[in-house]
Image (cartoon, rainbow, N blue to C red; front, side):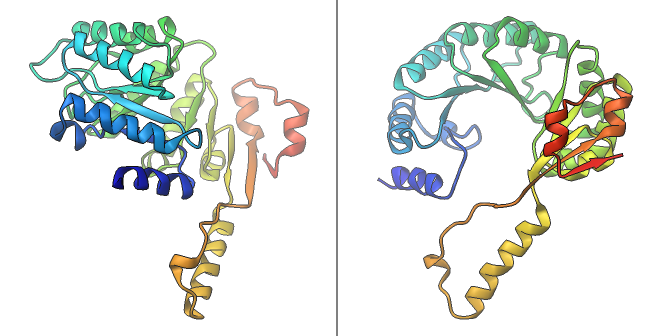
Length: 272
């Protein structure tokens, strides 16, 4: 089937995981039975190669709980939940909905938090309560507009939590706002770890990720082979081969952290 082939292609291309169904696509077009059948195909096609996260889109709590239980029995590796937004639920109602879903499965869980775009808002203190009450609530996917004021508020709120840290993915949004994020993290004295070296240079604590210049040089090799007559379809997908670890020692001192000596010895650069 084409869906199975698509999942197989994602596995071969080095994808880290597969999420299904899409909140803005399949959910609106497929029935519950069709979603279940497609989810089974995705899980079977992925096998043990990459994790499969199944998305819970039911608006009624009882149906969302039933979906979480069904998906867990299917053998997926994680769940993601879009809180109800049809009918204008309150923050407390949304909190109870998500809590019930979390109670129904112990799989790693991600919450889609979209207060301004879909009206699925839960106040930050309630998000913190969910994280403390349910350790398997491991991630919150945040969609909002405008972004900058929300980033400022969330980082400031997060800074009030004891023993916190911020891990930032290598993506455009956090990179564009990195200066403001680092400033707030420094004020509240909690560390930032990122895959982008620019965060460590800006004042984040640690950056570990792909060496971007080396990645561009690796891409240039593809261009050279194509210009010499090579067929792109015959060229294997290559993963990055050079990674770098940078530690900002000035930041470590400012937030009162002592970096273990073994980690310092493994660093490619210590930013003073």
